[in-house]
Structure formats: C-alpha cells, structure tokens
Length: 191
Image 1: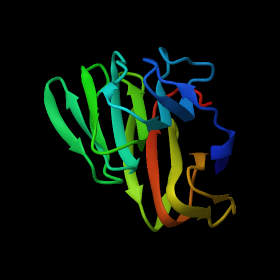
Image 2 (image 1 turned 45 degrees about the vertical axis):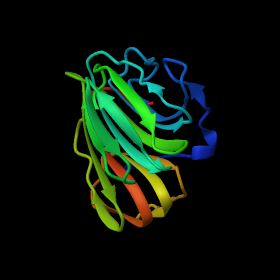
Image 3 (image 1 turned 120 degrees about the vertical axis):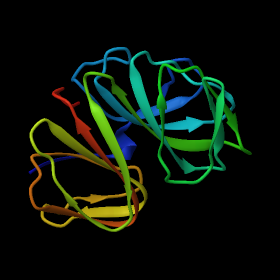
Image 4 (image 1 turned 60 degrees about the horizontal axis):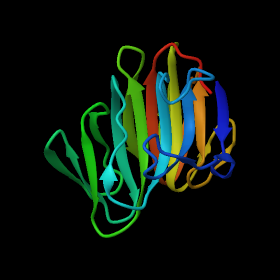
C-alpha cells in the first residue's frame, strides 16, 4: 500500500476560476494539469457571498457542505437546498449554477471529474472503514471533522488533512469524527 499524507496547513488559498471566492486544492490529476485540463480535482472552498459558480465544461461535480448554514444552488433553473452537513450533492459542472447563502459564509468539499477521463464516488464515513485501491484507482480520504488514523501504517490525519491511497490491500482507517472517502477511477497520474 502507498499512502501520501496531504496536510491542510500546506495548501495555499487561491482565487476561484471566476474570482468569487477562495479554494484550497487537496489533490488533482494528472501532474501539471491546470484548471482547464485536469482529469479530477478535489478541493475545499470558502464561500463568503452569493453569486454564480464557475462553469467547467464536460465536468461532473459533487459538493458537500462542511461548515456554515448552507446554500441554495440553482442549477439550470432548478433550486436545490444544500443545508445538511456531510450530504454529497452531485450536479453537472457545465450547468449554469448560482448560489444563495442561507445566513452566512460556509466551507464546502468539492470533487470534480472530467467526463470520459475519470469517475468519482464520494462516501461519508464516521467509523472504521476498510480501504481498497485496485489498479487504475486512487482513494482519497479527507477528514472533515475530528481525526483519523491508518491502523497498519500509522499516519494520523487531523481536520482537513488528507491522504492519497494507491495499491491498498487490507488497510483499515479508524475515523473519530467524519471523513470523506473519494474513490477515483481513471488512468491519470496524481499530484
């Protein structure tokens, strides 16, 4: 098993594609890919005000509320309330999407995959979980609340820390709190 720990305090905050907020990239693929040519990208975003979401052609998104009162996303004219923490919401990244905050700033967990190049499954875990990463699969764990520890290899992950796992066999993660478990399938090299 290969585990690469990704510490939250090592992530720079960068402006969104549309300039409307800040994001901290957790991981993406392939290496050296930019915002327009990633196969997949995972980040945490600070949303301080209402406004349009950046448009990403041929990209599917899964967004999960982590902190704050939530938001209403209007996706191609249909409203969706995203107000319950740790409940993933999937929508097309190339849809016209607008955000209205429900009472103040928030933090969200964002997974984006380019159609035809990668797929993602986002699960929220709150206890012990067995990890498996067969060929052409990367598993990304990000602690959203509390902490987590790998039983066999020992790294401890604190809030917003992450770990990229490849070639996982018989590894167990103990979560004390809440973590996002993202299974990414695609042949892109990870950075």
